[in-house]
Image (cartoon, rainbow, N blue to C red; front, side):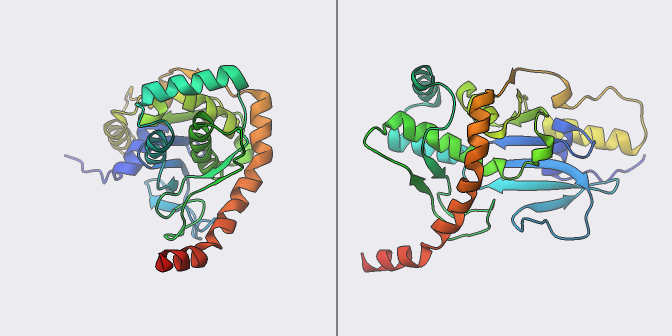
Length: 267
């Protein structure tokens, strides 16, 4: 019986979602969140210093850019801004807001770092921030901006040269059609809702079949079709213009850490 050294859970899940071809991204909106892709193996460290890599077979590697709070940030925002509303009720709030204001930036910038961060910076002291509040800001705006902030944080991992390529999204947060629209607009990519329940098993089977050169009909989730959410052109352009400012906000907030510690010690 042949023995195949299969990938670990993250690698197997990625193969089950996007397959073995390098260059394809997928996103996960679970409690934490990430952008991941299969790439040719590199001998040097990840250029951003915050992504991490896992070895795969065939001279490839898994490149993962992960934020610590994705669905966790959304759950916190529902408690803090919407009185503990369930996700379905919160979606209705977002839909009502979208009917009133349309798609596009909320006018707020949010860092969803509730307790340290892994990407786009690696900083265990970083905390979240909300910038841009004025007298017209309401709970729905703050909740939408939190989901927007998660999407912006993850978007820093995407290669602008791949704009327009479908981005499969998995995880509990992907069940929200409102969040998928935000994600599509922020990334400027069509977002495919992929059912990721069996992704890890599918990927392990695919890795084994390919390693043994077997004929098979194993198809990654991204190739099985599903609901696609297209980005709004004007909203995507507005978010693209905001992305550099959002990225600089991490350094600004990190610079406040010594003062924050001093204030906490004084309390």
